[in-house]
Image 1 (cartoon, one colour):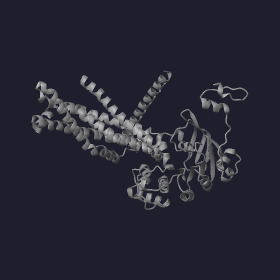
Image 2 (cartoon, chains in turn red, green):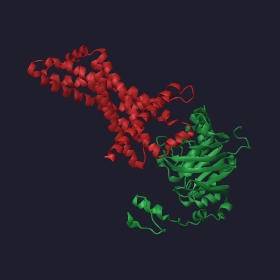
Image 3 (cartoon, one colour):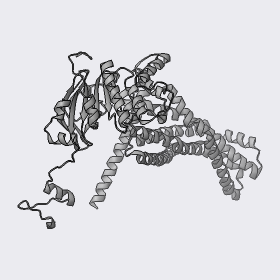
Image 4 (tube, one colour):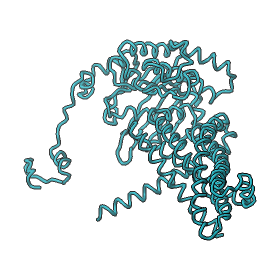
Length: 263
Length: 281
């Protein structure tokens, strides 16, 4: 019993320590982004864009395919549920709102966490193990400035764009199924959807995606920097960072939605 | 004190104490390195020599003590001062620590990008020159993963000397290399000292290479300095542990019976008359 309480205490302390570390990293990246230039140590634009390309462009197809499937799945469930009430036409509203507020950002977040978050954790972990992080420091390049800040900006650019793509393909997926099931023409479906969606709904999804972007980068990066114990350590950190960032995304999403719907 | 003043010691370490968690790693280390000399820091595995190097490079903050590089204390510097200081320091890490995502030439040019405003062509030429120095001319466009162990070390050396630093640190230059390549690297280190008047600190456990290149040797053991002296002085040392290190003798530590039993059983054992009653517990 005593041991368990001790263990609980240790875990709590570690968790708080890790949270503190995450905040420090976030603070430092913002510091370099804002004040780096003044100290003649600005964050490289080239790095930002090359990473935005890696995170964004190469994820377009998978985001599109998955959001398309989720949209289609929502249409199936929606039409099925609404059939007894004869309210199938309402499916458009439901899907338009849930995709734009919720699903596009969430699916994009999960994909990017799996693709780019893990890559970031693995990259930083490997660099730490091979002393490349030390090498950066002795050259005079702050690792946060060089590795974290560009990834953060790149992610903040890529995630909202991917989310917009997710919005469109999600609704398209629903539209295709509705066309098949109720023979509602695509353009009618899409134009009705766009009528329902307010700017606020779109913004909700986009703001969420930016919060997810920050969560993915910070979670992956702290896991990468904490790597110990060679290749095995890198593997563990990568797994941990994916699990942690997906959990963080889903929980943050829930909290966000709570406040946005209550207020 | 002005940087590079010939009166100044290149490195001056006073009463350095460091901890890893609660464990004391380096215990009251004091040493200095003169300008233009090659100082070899020698010791077995776990002697604290790699840790010592990390503190010399300012990668970690000590518990207490001071580390002066070229006359200024790096433990009390602002991050901007430290950034400036890094222009004067070159480091070649044990595994090379070349950035895997860049070509060899890009690796070598990185410190130039960071500390200078030169144009691309000048940087190209400078990196070519350093590649010539380390006998790697023509390999600039390769990726680090395409290089052999010896080539990686030489490329890392080229990156370390790109800014013509006053201080060059070398971690285990011969680790993982065959004798011929390792001898060539020793040769290169000696050339650098003569041609560029660098102060060089080499951390190693390779005796042969240590004796070949060193002006002076500092022997570290279990976090303490056993001695600092010239090659001859170290060779003739009567210290048992230095003798063991030099003659590849296994350690023969006296076993503290009490402590040993405590370690084994995890309990405090009391015994009488110096005879052990392990069964008591």
